[in-house]
Image 1: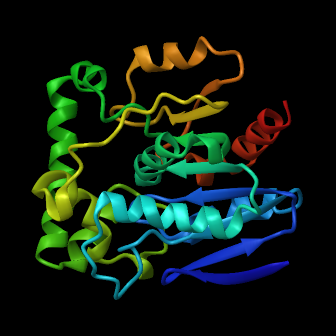
Image 2: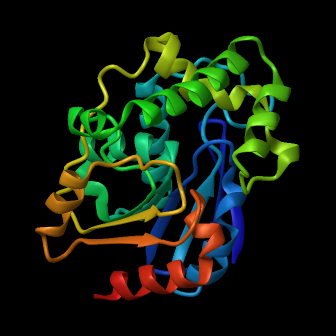
Amino acid sequence: MTKTIQVKNTTVHLYGEGSTTMLMIHGWPDTHEIWDKQVAYFQKEFTCATFTLPGFSKGDDHKYTLDEIVQRIRDIVEAIGKNEQVVFMVHDWGCVFGYEYVMRYPETVKKMVAIDVGDASSKEFEKSLPLSAKLMAFSYQFTLALGWLVKSDAVHKTMAKALKARSNMNNIHAGMGLPYAMRWFNIAGGMSKLVQIRPSFPFFYVYAKKKPFSFHSESWLEELAKHPENRVKGYDSAHWVMVDKADEFNKDVDRWLKE
């Protein structure tokens, strides 16, 4: 079964009729479509729910605050969760917003799969980055923040091509830079109050190995690995692990969810 529902002006796509709901949250410069390979695989046993983050749909130029984005996720969970705990699958900025949500509402979370962004808001991570990585991160993130500020779709499309994004280029626009503008220009209250993810539920962290630098610290990986219900795995892939290594990733997640 495939259907859509409206939750506070957000279109939520629902696939399958499983008793457990899996909510997927994308990052930059993606939309709900980035999860197509996961939906095709997991809808046999789960109800898969995807949506496009606030500000990422064309024409949605509202300056959302962190609290507003987290509340939108909360509204979606309440609409689709069937009063049961939800499995979260998150990537990139979806990790950032997803972490903020699950740390505020851990009672709604059954398990969580996070892709390629870990403790990126921690002091440990900042200390672990060499200067070259810090400059690289600043360069592309600040450029995307500027792209949002001057409303330049071209900046985001050019950067997406340079970073070999797996997105549909027709969907990419300047509004997707809102999280970067929040990060670097303190737009809509900024992100200075981000929480550090310390999961109290089973957690599977996936990261890409074919990158100049990672968005997690080694000490955080070691902390995760101390808990037997957690799993950590690196893939020979670029940032979009769930696309480039879809078959391997889906099977790994499936096995872990059934443990």
